[in-house]
Image (cartoon, rainbow, N blue to C red; front, side):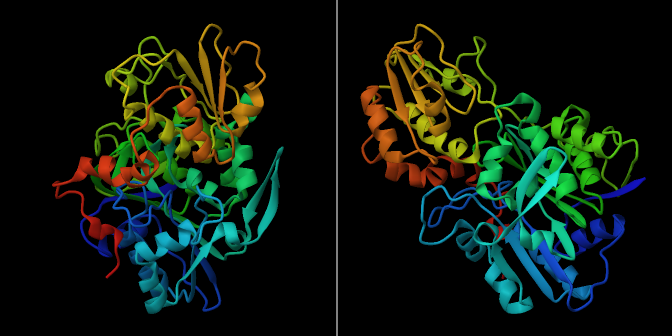
Length: 441
């Protein structure tokens, strides 16, 4: 049986200590042991008060884990993350900005903790079966790895927990490879391989805040006060999924990972310890953005009264670059000056496999993969493209002008602040959403 501790978060240090103890405890370290903590730092907007709830691992649990590691003799501790840069050649990396904003510099002063941007380091090619991925060398060479994801759903992988969190240790080329157009070796297939490719010693799933429709702030966060801990990565994820109200057997990457280890995905070989009933602890969390009844646009877009747009459901082939960039397309439509009139029959395609539908007046191809796939497709009457990887904002403005989608003045500047102006509004005035969980005093 594999032990998994599940506790309610009640107070700093003691709650994490309880979860860790229930899961079998942390090993003692020699002074020269290399210890790596892998948090979940999906995004960072410098100078913008964006919602961090269930998007980022709380600084509270990161600090508590560092203290526990130090108490067990660890002296060489690194926080390693590889957040995708949405702009080319930024002055400061997302990891550096996030580390400062989340208070990791305090951990450096107190405990000598290093912060390492995985994308600036070296990578080692790791083969497993028919998959070869370039993985950050720091985590591969560590003596002890603590995986600290957020307890949240994911609009592609259904859940983003310990296994999915390890995607941040891949270089950009390998991450793109994960979003393969071949359904037999798709995103879920690649993610399932992480459990065998990257050594994890201990997993702590941070459920102080959880979210529907993650992994970013487009969904809705909840204050849930749950910590899941285990020495076994897969077991932690199986339990985490169940806490979110999703049967782990229905989650492709978890079911595949279990099969590689000749284990069931139904928790029958897992012993849950603690006073939390994982079946009823939380209300079920939704993971996908539903389409309307016709299936030709997202339900939220139909409810907003948008007409004249066809937008197929996003698939597993859209990578992180386009997944973030597509928000410009969505918000551009929602904020358009002429949104109250029907747009001129525009079909919007993204990812690596979507094909145009005959008969539309205009087809917008978003991202370089989609441009390469369909720019010469004879089915398209009027082809408009937003090329680039990541897609170009300059080309975005040009495309919307060509399609007569009238953007508000200074739209790009507004988009930079939209996480605060739009998404943060969901939590204003609610005392459950406490920003101090993302600071270190």
